[in-house]
Image (cartoon, rainbow, N blue to C red; front, side, top):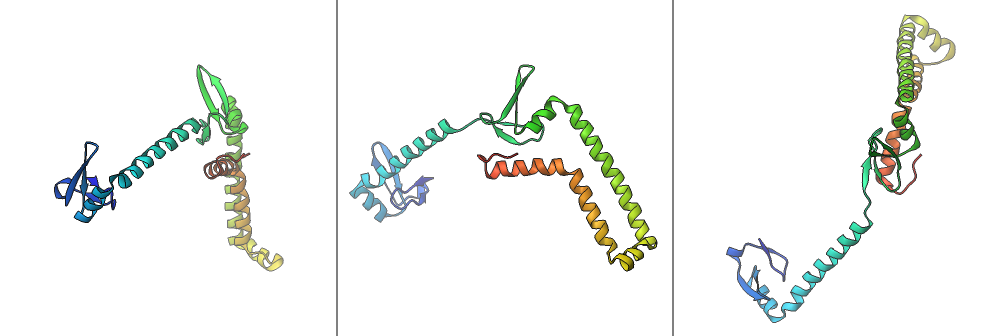
Length: 191
């Protein structure tokens, strides 16, 4: 496919309405009026294309000079700028981190494991307590809560579940928030 420099239309070389030669290059046209306009003043149609190519090349070179290398945080998976991130050399390899928390987790994974075990244990006991609470409401205590205190058993269970899920998932919510802010506001400092 060739491009008609006058109107910008794609032209199949075999089906072109006409051709012209300019600086050793064959130019294909979609119609005879386009060929006539080009032949009258070829510089008006070729020079802007060449200047746009040069301008595009300059922009690409400038973008390449200002671009930074990125790396992936091995803990949370966030993509970070190598120049602005925390780093740790270990075993001849450099690791890059988005925050102090991820760096501490990398340096002491047993602490993160202990913290995760604690959160999972609390979650399991919380789910068990929620199941007992729901069973109690169905066995009649729910009636007391509704009549005596004006509370809906579903409201109490919902509040309890929200608090439990918020506590257990806080670390993942924090990491997701940092990743989201890093994608939309890459220069913003996230904590």
